[in-house]
Image 1 (cartoon, rainbow, N blue to C red):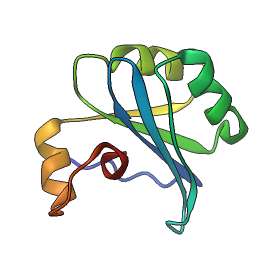
Image 2 (image 1 turned 120 degrees about the horizontal axis):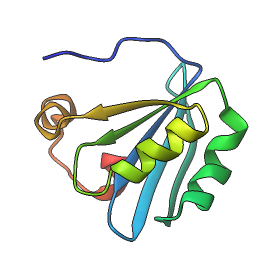
Image 3 (image 1 turned 180 degrees about the vertical axis):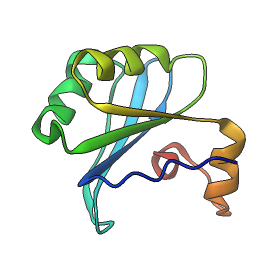
Length: 103
């Protein structure tokens, strides 16, 4: 299993769905900066990510609707990490599972 191991000032995890996103942003010390449910809209996501330009990495689970987030990150030069679903399960390890926690 290969893990992403670069350091950033901020980390963004997104739990993707066809129509909604759960977005969570943590700082380098693990403090929660933002935890929000938004529509699956590039402009809404960009509005959240823009203040962290050049300081954030965006991570999502590999599933059917990840590609547009990757394209958005590429267009606006955000670092992007695509995680394999089995790796996400190995990392999570918790007993409770829901979209808010997954983000």
